[in-house]
Image (cartoon, rainbow, N blue to C red; front, side, top):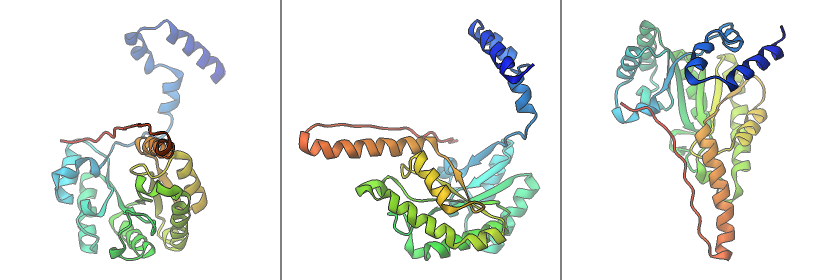
Length: 251
């Protein structure tokens, strides 16, 4: 029987099924069988969700291991302590003993973003340092961001995307040599999904992935709508408001 026929039968069953029957069906359904045939997703934690604990990287890893986490995402340098090679090797060794994979990340790599910290060096210097650090600690990626909703002001987001793409292309050789992917996250309302797609395509194949944040993408859409309405409001004397909620795992 074709997949289309299986799906048709499944939809007919769902129409007349209650919740308990639906749960019972799940394990035996053709869709579940298809899912079982592929690689299983791993349980991971972004340590930004635990940032208020202010733990050492070893404490973060122990906490995650006790909860059977398979991947720990050190999304900012502050969570891993420092990028000193000795520290990175200690973290890698401890994670390996616990059977945990590590991912590391940083903040803005867009030199024109309001979030960019020029005191740490140029965007290229910072990203190259992170690529080297990822290789030492055993991370296959470096997570980075463009900026925040502030970078949408004045219709400048397209220019910021172009600046970020230039930085990504400048580190292509080092990232490729070390087999590290740069995973750009749409962050704090900086980019909508289509804009993140533009950035990924601009960076080119073999260099970059993406870390899609659904709430941030919605935040960017809200900001665009509010900004557009505000330009009308200054003439029409009307008011408006909008909000979004991001969920974090906290102890």
